[in-house]
Length: 85
Image (cartoon, rainbow, N blue to C red; front, side, top):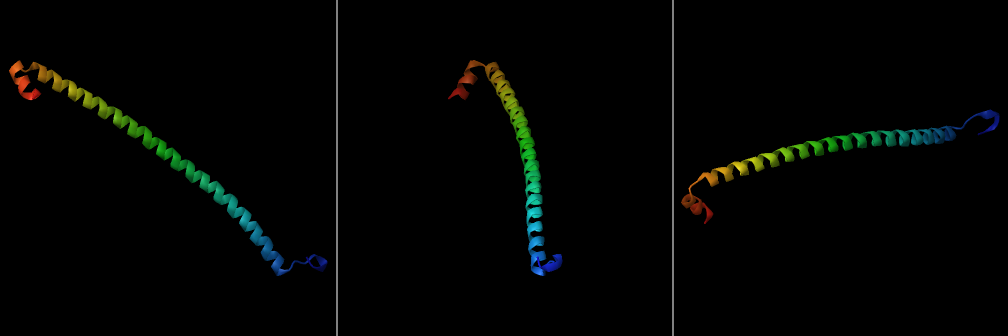
């Protein structure tokens, strides 16, 4: 500062740059954390949904295999041998 508490233009620019740098960093960090948390939540929801779908698909496959085995066992022995080869 110069005499009589007057600011030079270069001092004002430096102060403004410092202020915007600090505020920009804090806002960027806050928004980055918020976006990251949203992305994590969305990924976790997708994981849960995929797990539920996989469980349902596995149950359907087991059910289909059981139906096949019941139908196979209902065949006469000579026809079962044709499929066993």
